[in-house]
Image (cartoon, rainbow over the protein chains, first blue to last red):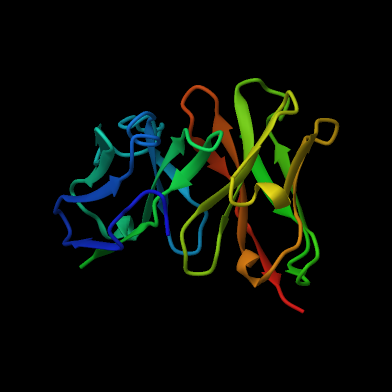
Length: 111
Length: 120
């Protein structure tokens, strides 16, 4: 069972806006920034959002992140078929001398 | 352009030690701007951070694996390594090495991953 909680699945049609939630606690999301990763089928994860809402160079502005309290969200607007992938949130957890924790992942299906 | 490449045996027997190496090209593991980490993904499951190495020699690991994990770096070869002892079938996974930025705190560059199966 993952420390960060994500819905196992999400879906949308092309052009729609979808959001994926990530719930944690005071020792992780509540006190540290959140990163989001996209994993296309059969490939390594790719950094999508860092520091809650920052996009690395090359990531389209259709992807956005936010954080409030002990929860975070990833929003994808103008959904495209290429966005079909697994999405993971991650944060540093301050307990037990500190360690990185990930969400269980959300499989996004573009209908 | 920075690239990371994992290497090591694809098959390990139960109770033995899993050993993997990550070779970094296009950048230096001696940089103070980055940590170098290992993350794994069991078949059909999510990501799990194993541990990280810093150029100073400091290492950090997941509390759930700490007693079995050793991470080290070889600056002369620009490589860092993972050893996981006393493996069981639960350690079967794709193992990734990745770079983590100190300032942004995110794993921004990943290797392609290597599959390790624990089986007799």
